[in-house]
Image (cartoon, rainbow, N blue to C red; front, side, top):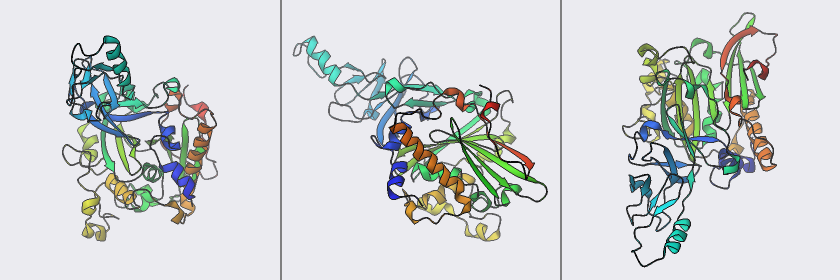
Length: 411
Protein backbone atom coordinates (compact mmCIF):
# COMPACT_ATOMS: atom_id res chain seq x y z
CA UNK A 1 0.00 0.00 0.00
CA UNK A 2 1.26 3.45 -0.91
CA UNK A 3 0.51 6.38 1.38
CA UNK A 4 -1.64 9.21 0.06
CA UNK A 5 1.32 11.59 0.25
CA UNK A 6 3.65 9.30 -1.71
CA UNK A 7 0.93 8.56 -4.25
CA UNK A 8 0.58 12.30 -4.84
CA UNK A 9 4.34 12.70 -5.24
CA UNK A 10 4.51 9.97 -7.87
CA UNK A 11 1.41 10.82 -9.88
CA UNK A 12 1.13 14.61 -10.05
CA UNK A 13 3.14 15.93 -13.00
CA UNK A 14 2.27 19.58 -13.47
CA UNK A 15 4.77 22.46 -13.20
CA UNK A 16 6.22 22.68 -9.69
CA UNK A 17 5.28 19.15 -8.65
CA UNK A 18 8.13 16.80 -7.65
CA UNK A 19 7.48 14.25 -10.43
CA UNK A 20 6.79 16.96 -12.99
CA UNK A 21 10.10 18.65 -12.18
CA UNK A 22 11.91 15.30 -12.33
CA UNK A 23 10.53 14.51 -15.78
CA UNK A 24 11.59 17.93 -17.00
CA UNK A 25 15.19 16.93 -16.35
CA UNK A 26 14.99 14.41 -19.22
CA UNK A 27 14.27 14.55 -22.95
CA UNK A 28 10.56 13.88 -23.50
CA UNK A 29 8.61 13.03 -26.69
CA UNK A 30 6.47 15.78 -28.21
CA UNK A 31 5.12 14.65 -31.59
CA UNK A 32 6.05 12.36 -34.45
CA UNK A 33 8.12 14.02 -37.15
CA UNK A 34 5.42 13.30 -39.72
CA UNK A 35 2.98 15.46 -37.74
CA UNK A 36 5.02 18.54 -38.68
CA UNK A 37 6.18 17.20 -42.04
CA UNK A 38 7.79 20.20 -43.74
CA UNK A 39 9.02 23.77 -43.19
CA UNK A 40 6.25 26.29 -42.46
CA UNK A 41 3.63 23.54 -42.12
CA UNK A 42 0.66 24.12 -39.77
CA UNK A 43 1.49 23.96 -36.04
CA UNK A 44 0.05 21.18 -33.87
CA UNK A 45 -1.05 21.19 -30.23
CA UNK A 46 1.13 19.31 -27.74
CA UNK A 47 0.12 19.22 -24.10
CA UNK A 48 2.99 17.95 -21.94
CA UNK A 49 3.24 17.73 -18.15
CA UNK A 50 0.13 19.87 -17.76
CA UNK A 51 1.44 22.63 -20.02
CA UNK A 52 -0.39 23.71 -23.20
CA UNK A 53 2.12 24.03 -26.04
CA UNK A 54 2.32 24.06 -29.82
CA UNK A 55 4.93 22.31 -31.96
CA UNK A 56 5.93 23.58 -35.40
CA UNK A 57 8.70 23.39 -37.98
CA UNK A 58 10.11 26.77 -39.01
CA UNK A 59 11.31 27.89 -42.41
CA UNK A 60 14.77 26.38 -41.81
CA UNK A 61 13.16 22.98 -41.20
CA UNK A 62 14.01 22.88 -37.50
CA UNK A 63 11.32 21.90 -34.97
CA UNK A 64 10.19 24.23 -32.21
CA UNK A 65 8.01 23.94 -29.11
CA UNK A 66 6.48 27.07 -27.58
CA UNK A 67 3.68 28.05 -25.21
CA UNK A 68 0.27 27.93 -26.88
CA UNK A 69 -0.96 31.23 -25.46
CA UNK A 70 0.23 34.44 -27.11
CA UNK A 71 1.40 36.71 -24.24
CA UNK A 72 -0.50 39.71 -25.63
CA UNK A 73 -4.15 38.63 -25.16
CA UNK A 74 -3.55 34.90 -24.58
CA UNK A 75 -5.01 33.77 -27.92
CA UNK A 76 -3.99 30.32 -29.14
CA UNK A 77 -0.96 30.12 -31.41
CA UNK A 78 -2.35 26.83 -32.77
CA UNK A 79 -4.24 29.07 -35.20
CA UNK A 80 -1.06 30.98 -36.01
CA UNK A 81 0.60 31.52 -39.38
CA UNK A 82 3.85 29.58 -39.65
CA UNK A 83 5.92 31.74 -41.97
CA UNK A 84 9.32 33.32 -42.53
CA UNK A 85 11.11 31.81 -39.57
CA UNK A 86 8.41 32.09 -36.93
CA UNK A 87 4.86 31.64 -35.73
CA UNK A 88 2.60 34.68 -36.11
CA UNK A 89 -0.52 35.08 -33.95
CA UNK A 90 -3.54 35.73 -36.17
CA UNK A 91 -5.22 37.93 -33.53
CA UNK A 92 -2.84 40.92 -33.77
CA UNK A 93 0.04 39.64 -35.91
CA UNK A 94 2.66 39.33 -33.16
CA UNK A 95 5.35 36.87 -34.21
CA UNK A 96 7.65 34.48 -32.31
CA UNK A 97 10.59 32.33 -33.32
CA UNK A 98 11.22 28.76 -32.14
CA UNK A 99 13.34 30.07 -29.23
CA UNK A 100 10.37 32.07 -27.90
CA UNK A 101 11.75 35.47 -28.96
CA UNK A 102 9.23 38.08 -30.09
CA UNK A 103 10.24 38.99 -33.63
CA UNK A 104 7.58 41.49 -34.65
CA UNK A 105 4.80 43.60 -33.09
CA UNK A 106 3.00 44.97 -36.17
CA UNK A 107 -0.10 45.99 -34.21
CA UNK A 108 1.83 49.04 -32.93
CA UNK A 109 1.46 51.77 -35.52
CA UNK A 110 4.72 53.25 -36.92
CA UNK A 111 5.74 56.50 -35.30
CA UNK A 112 3.76 55.95 -32.10
CA UNK A 113 6.53 54.20 -30.19
CA UNK A 114 10.29 54.56 -30.20
CA UNK A 115 12.59 51.75 -31.30
CA UNK A 116 13.83 51.44 -27.71
CA UNK A 117 10.28 51.02 -26.50
CA UNK A 118 9.54 48.47 -29.23
CA UNK A 119 12.57 46.42 -28.19
CA UNK A 120 11.48 46.55 -24.56
CA UNK A 121 8.00 45.34 -25.55
CA UNK A 122 9.55 42.48 -27.53
CA UNK A 123 11.55 41.41 -24.47
CA UNK A 124 8.41 41.48 -22.35
CA UNK A 125 6.54 39.46 -24.97
CA UNK A 126 8.99 36.56 -24.92
CA UNK A 127 7.19 33.21 -24.48
CA UNK A 128 8.23 29.89 -23.00
CA UNK A 129 10.09 27.78 -25.52
CA UNK A 130 11.88 24.47 -25.17
CA UNK A 131 14.86 23.16 -27.17
CA UNK A 132 14.05 20.25 -29.46
CA UNK A 133 15.92 17.30 -30.95
CA UNK A 134 14.57 15.16 -33.76
CA UNK A 135 15.54 11.49 -33.48
CA UNK A 136 14.04 8.26 -34.78
CA UNK A 137 11.00 9.92 -36.33
CA UNK A 138 10.10 11.68 -33.06
CA UNK A 139 10.56 15.28 -31.95
CA UNK A 140 11.81 15.39 -28.36
CA UNK A 141 12.07 18.41 -26.07
CA UNK A 142 13.97 19.31 -22.92
CA UNK A 143 11.76 21.26 -20.51
CA UNK A 144 14.06 21.62 -17.52
CA UNK A 145 16.59 24.23 -16.35
CA UNK A 146 18.79 25.18 -19.35
CA UNK A 147 21.99 24.84 -17.34
CA UNK A 148 21.13 21.20 -16.51
CA UNK A 149 20.25 20.07 -20.03
CA UNK A 150 21.71 16.58 -20.64
CA UNK A 151 22.96 15.15 -23.91
CA UNK A 152 20.38 13.15 -25.85
CA UNK A 153 20.13 9.50 -24.68
CA UNK A 154 21.74 6.89 -26.94
CA UNK A 155 18.61 4.81 -27.53
CA UNK A 156 18.91 1.96 -30.02
CA UNK A 157 15.46 2.38 -31.54
CA UNK A 158 16.14 6.01 -32.53
CA UNK A 159 19.41 5.03 -34.25
CA UNK A 160 18.04 2.33 -36.56
CA UNK A 161 16.89 3.09 -40.10
CA UNK A 162 13.28 4.11 -40.62
CA UNK A 163 12.43 0.77 -42.25
CA UNK A 164 13.61 -1.00 -39.07
CA UNK A 165 11.11 0.81 -36.88
CA UNK A 166 7.30 0.83 -36.61
CA UNK A 167 5.87 3.39 -34.19
CA UNK A 168 2.40 4.53 -33.14
CA UNK A 169 0.89 6.41 -30.23
CA UNK A 170 -2.47 6.77 -28.50
CA UNK A 171 -3.97 8.54 -25.51
CA UNK A 172 -4.66 6.64 -22.30
CA UNK A 173 -7.28 8.27 -20.08
CA UNK A 174 -5.38 7.65 -16.86
CA UNK A 175 -2.27 8.69 -14.96
CA UNK A 176 1.14 7.80 -16.37
CA UNK A 177 2.10 5.63 -13.36
CA UNK A 178 -0.78 3.24 -14.03
CA UNK A 179 0.71 2.66 -17.46
CA UNK A 180 4.28 2.23 -16.23
CA UNK A 181 3.29 -0.17 -13.46
CA UNK A 182 1.18 -2.17 -15.89
CA UNK A 183 4.16 -2.40 -18.20
CA UNK A 184 6.28 -4.03 -15.51
CA UNK A 185 3.56 -6.24 -14.04
CA UNK A 186 4.67 -9.68 -15.22
CA UNK A 187 1.85 -11.72 -13.70
CA UNK A 188 -0.87 -10.09 -15.78
CA UNK A 189 0.54 -11.63 -18.97
CA UNK A 190 -0.84 -14.98 -17.88
CA UNK A 191 -4.36 -13.62 -17.43
CA UNK A 192 -5.07 -10.28 -19.10
CA UNK A 193 -3.30 -11.40 -22.29
CA UNK A 194 -4.37 -15.03 -21.94
CA UNK A 195 -5.21 -16.55 -25.29
CA UNK A 196 -2.92 -14.09 -27.05
CA UNK A 197 0.35 -14.54 -25.17
CA UNK A 198 2.92 -17.12 -26.19
CA UNK A 199 2.83 -20.50 -24.38
CA UNK A 200 5.56 -19.72 -21.81
CA UNK A 201 3.55 -16.72 -20.56
CA UNK A 202 0.76 -19.06 -19.49
CA UNK A 203 2.85 -19.89 -16.40
CA UNK A 204 2.76 -17.47 -13.47
CA UNK A 205 6.29 -16.27 -12.59
CA UNK A 206 7.97 -17.95 -9.63
CA UNK A 207 10.65 -15.31 -8.94
CA UNK A 208 10.67 -11.51 -9.19
CA UNK A 209 13.85 -9.42 -9.14
CA UNK A 210 14.28 -5.65 -9.43
CA UNK A 211 17.79 -4.24 -9.60
CA UNK A 212 18.51 -0.46 -9.49
CA UNK A 213 20.95 0.69 -12.17
CA UNK A 214 22.59 3.86 -13.44
CA UNK A 215 19.76 4.25 -15.99
CA UNK A 216 16.69 3.20 -13.96
CA UNK A 217 16.17 -0.45 -13.14
CA UNK A 218 16.11 -3.99 -14.53
CA UNK A 219 13.18 -6.30 -13.79
CA UNK A 220 13.73 -10.05 -14.01
CA UNK A 221 10.94 -12.62 -13.76
CA UNK A 222 11.47 -16.38 -13.81
CA UNK A 223 8.89 -18.93 -14.92
CA UNK A 224 9.05 -22.62 -14.04
CA UNK A 225 7.86 -24.65 -17.03
CA UNK A 226 9.12 -27.87 -15.47
CA UNK A 227 12.58 -29.31 -15.85
CA UNK A 228 15.91 -28.10 -14.47
CA UNK A 229 15.82 -24.48 -15.73
CA UNK A 230 13.96 -21.25 -15.15
CA UNK A 231 12.79 -19.25 -18.14
CA UNK A 232 13.90 -15.70 -17.39
CA UNK A 233 12.30 -12.61 -18.90
CA UNK A 234 14.36 -9.42 -18.45
CA UNK A 235 12.82 -5.98 -19.06
CA UNK A 236 14.54 -2.62 -18.78
CA UNK A 237 13.17 0.65 -17.41
CA UNK A 238 15.00 3.78 -18.60
CA UNK A 239 14.30 6.96 -16.67
CA UNK A 240 11.86 8.50 -16.48
CA UNK A 241 9.09 6.48 -18.27
CA UNK A 242 10.71 4.35 -20.96
CA UNK A 243 10.51 0.56 -21.25
CA UNK A 244 12.56 -1.70 -23.51
CA UNK A 245 10.45 -4.83 -23.97
CA UNK A 246 11.87 -8.34 -24.20
CA UNK A 247 9.81 -9.29 -27.23
CA UNK A 248 10.41 -10.43 -30.77
CA UNK A 249 10.78 -8.09 -32.55
CA UNK A 250 12.30 -5.76 -29.98
CA UNK A 251 9.88 -3.15 -28.71
CA UNK A 252 9.66 -0.07 -26.52
CA UNK A 253 7.08 2.05 -24.72
CA UNK A 254 7.14 5.65 -23.51
CA UNK A 255 4.37 6.74 -21.12
CA UNK A 256 4.52 10.50 -21.63
CA UNK A 257 2.26 12.39 -19.19
CA UNK A 258 -0.10 14.83 -20.87
CA UNK A 259 -1.40 15.88 -17.47
CA UNK A 260 -2.33 14.15 -14.22
CA UNK A 261 -5.19 12.19 -15.79
CA UNK A 262 -4.06 11.55 -19.37
CA UNK A 263 -1.01 9.87 -20.90
CA UNK A 264 0.36 9.66 -24.44
CA UNK A 265 1.63 6.13 -24.92
CA UNK A 266 4.25 5.75 -27.65
CA UNK A 267 4.70 2.14 -28.84
CA UNK A 268 7.64 1.13 -31.00
CA UNK A 269 8.63 -2.12 -32.69
CA UNK A 270 12.22 -2.13 -33.91
CA UNK A 271 14.87 -4.41 -35.32
CA UNK A 272 18.46 -4.23 -34.01
CA UNK A 273 21.07 -2.31 -35.94
CA UNK A 274 22.43 -4.30 -38.85
CA UNK A 275 19.50 -6.75 -38.97
CA UNK A 276 17.83 -5.35 -42.08
CA UNK A 277 14.37 -3.84 -42.64
CA UNK A 278 11.05 -5.21 -41.45
CA UNK A 279 9.28 -7.54 -43.83
CA UNK A 280 5.54 -7.34 -44.43
CA UNK A 281 5.17 -10.66 -42.64
CA UNK A 282 6.99 -9.34 -39.56
CA UNK A 283 4.68 -6.31 -39.39
CA UNK A 284 1.47 -8.23 -40.01
CA UNK A 285 0.60 -8.65 -36.31
CA UNK A 286 1.29 -5.01 -35.50
CA UNK A 287 -0.73 -3.68 -38.43
CA UNK A 288 -3.62 -5.97 -37.50
CA UNK A 289 -3.58 -4.34 -34.02
CA UNK A 290 -3.14 -7.65 -32.24
CA UNK A 291 0.04 -6.56 -30.44
CA UNK A 292 1.01 -3.40 -28.55
CA UNK A 293 -0.31 -1.00 -31.22
CA UNK A 294 -3.86 0.34 -31.31
CA UNK A 295 -6.15 1.19 -34.19
CA UNK A 296 -6.94 4.88 -33.85
CA UNK A 297 -9.86 6.98 -35.02
CA UNK A 298 -8.53 8.54 -38.25
CA UNK A 299 -6.80 11.86 -37.67
CA UNK A 300 -6.70 11.44 -33.89
CA UNK A 301 -4.67 9.86 -31.09
CA UNK A 302 -7.77 8.16 -29.65
CA UNK A 303 -8.19 4.41 -30.08
CA UNK A 304 -11.23 3.09 -31.95
CA UNK A 305 -11.74 0.69 -29.03
CA UNK A 306 -11.94 3.00 -26.01
CA UNK A 307 -13.59 3.62 -22.67
CA UNK A 308 -16.69 5.19 -24.23
CA UNK A 309 -17.57 1.96 -26.05
CA UNK A 310 -16.18 -0.45 -23.41
CA UNK A 311 -13.29 -1.29 -25.78
CA UNK A 312 -15.79 -3.18 -27.98
CA UNK A 313 -15.52 -6.12 -25.60
CA UNK A 314 -16.73 -9.35 -27.21
CA UNK A 315 -18.34 -11.44 -24.45
CA UNK A 316 -18.72 -14.46 -26.70
CA UNK A 317 -15.00 -14.37 -27.49
CA UNK A 318 -14.29 -14.00 -23.78
CA UNK A 319 -16.47 -17.02 -22.95
CA UNK A 320 -14.90 -19.13 -25.71
CA UNK A 321 -11.50 -19.16 -24.02
CA UNK A 322 -9.73 -17.83 -27.10
CA UNK A 323 -9.33 -14.53 -25.26
CA UNK A 324 -9.32 -14.02 -21.49
CA UNK A 325 -10.77 -10.52 -21.86
CA UNK A 326 -12.73 -10.45 -25.09
CA UNK A 327 -10.79 -7.30 -26.03
CA UNK A 328 -8.77 -7.22 -29.24
CA UNK A 329 -5.05 -6.57 -28.98
CA UNK A 330 -2.51 -6.43 -26.17
CA UNK A 331 -2.47 -2.63 -26.27
CA UNK A 332 -6.24 -2.33 -25.83
CA UNK A 333 -6.25 -4.95 -23.08
CA UNK A 334 -3.59 -2.98 -21.17
CA UNK A 335 -5.26 0.36 -21.79
CA UNK A 336 -8.71 -0.89 -20.82
CA UNK A 337 -7.70 -2.37 -17.49
CA UNK A 338 -5.44 0.56 -16.56
CA UNK A 339 -8.17 3.09 -17.33
CA UNK A 340 -10.69 1.00 -15.37
CA UNK A 341 -8.80 1.92 -12.17
CA UNK A 342 -9.86 5.55 -12.56
CA UNK A 343 -7.98 8.68 -13.73
CA UNK A 344 -5.58 8.57 -10.75
CA UNK A 345 -5.90 5.39 -8.73
CA UNK A 346 -5.99 5.64 -4.92
CA UNK A 347 -3.33 3.08 -4.01
CA UNK A 348 -4.32 3.15 -0.33
CA UNK A 349 -7.08 0.71 -1.24
CA UNK A 350 -4.71 -1.92 -2.67
CA UNK A 351 -4.07 -5.37 -1.26
CA UNK A 352 -0.75 -6.33 -2.83
CA UNK A 353 0.39 -9.93 -3.37
CA UNK A 354 3.76 -11.62 -3.87
CA UNK A 355 3.46 -11.09 -7.63
CA UNK A 356 3.50 -7.34 -6.99
CA UNK A 357 7.06 -7.39 -5.63
CA UNK A 358 8.35 -5.58 -8.69
CA UNK A 359 5.66 -2.91 -8.40
CA UNK A 360 6.61 -2.16 -4.79
CA UNK A 361 10.31 -1.92 -5.60
CA UNK A 362 9.66 0.29 -8.63
CA UNK A 363 7.72 2.75 -6.47
CA UNK A 364 10.51 2.75 -3.90
CA UNK A 365 13.08 3.48 -6.60
CA UNK A 366 11.04 6.34 -8.05
CA UNK A 367 10.55 7.87 -4.58
CA UNK A 368 14.27 7.57 -3.92
CA UNK A 369 15.00 9.35 -7.21
CA UNK A 370 12.70 12.19 -6.18
CA UNK A 371 14.57 12.52 -2.87
CA UNK A 372 17.90 12.48 -4.69
CA UNK A 373 16.74 15.27 -7.00
CA UNK A 374 15.58 17.38 -4.07
CA UNK A 375 18.94 16.79 -2.33
CA UNK A 376 20.86 17.80 -5.45
CA UNK A 377 22.29 14.33 -6.02
CA UNK A 378 23.02 12.89 -9.49
CA UNK A 379 20.01 11.41 -11.30
CA UNK A 380 19.99 8.08 -13.15
CA UNK A 381 19.91 7.91 -16.93
CA UNK A 382 21.35 11.34 -17.78
CA UNK A 383 24.54 9.95 -19.31
CA UNK A 384 23.64 9.04 -22.94
CA UNK A 385 25.73 5.85 -22.72
CA UNK A 386 23.52 4.41 -19.98
CA UNK A 387 20.73 3.87 -22.53
CA UNK A 388 22.78 1.39 -24.59
CA UNK A 389 20.84 -1.56 -23.21
CA UNK A 390 18.51 -4.28 -24.46
CA UNK A 391 15.94 -6.46 -22.80
CA UNK A 392 16.35 -10.19 -23.22
CA UNK A 393 15.12 -13.70 -22.46
CA UNK A 394 17.17 -16.71 -21.48
CA UNK A 395 17.13 -20.03 -19.67
CA UNK A 396 19.31 -20.75 -16.64
CA UNK A 397 19.62 -23.57 -14.07
CA UNK A 398 17.27 -23.02 -11.16
CA UNK A 399 20.13 -22.66 -8.68
CA UNK A 400 21.72 -19.81 -10.69
CA UNK A 401 21.12 -16.46 -8.94
CA UNK A 402 19.80 -13.53 -10.95
CA UNK A 403 22.51 -10.97 -11.55
CA UNK A 404 22.76 -7.81 -13.63
CA UNK A 405 26.31 -6.85 -14.60
CA UNK A 406 26.63 -3.31 -15.95
CA UNK A 407 30.24 -4.00 -16.91
CA UNK A 408 29.02 -6.42 -19.55
CA UNK A 409 27.54 -3.57 -21.57
CA UNK A 410 29.79 -1.77 -24.04
CA UNK A 411 30.80 1.62 -22.68
